Length: 170
Image (cartoon, rainbow, N blue to C red; front, side, top):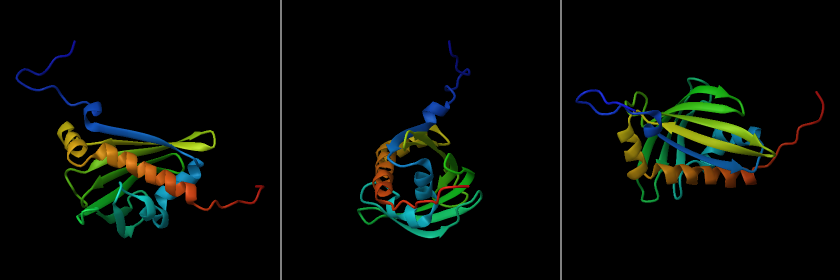
């Protein structure tokens, strides 16, 4: 049985504040991770259908920032800012995403890269500060569909990436 503080509302749980999408990408985790971590790749596929991305600054390291503009199909520009808070190569990326540095409505996203045979399952788990912000992102900005489309673009882009062959041996 659950209880609510007298005169209050039930506290928000993480499940009330999160959006989770995943996709299996037909490439090894190292290749998929590279597509996320090198701006020459990222700017080619990032964003939902009809969007393009212009990068202003990009430094992939813990504490580094990616400042970019997403250009919507209707001509609207959306200023974005990301800082990376955790990086485990080919396994996990944790980031904070807002409109600008210091955005009080910034949200956390965790990307995991799990090998599935010769493919990789990418899971994007985004946690918003409040359930209301999560609902607004889902309803007003179509965040679920946008995230699914973005991972779809990743899959298509990675399929066309040239594979570097590494020499065998130590």
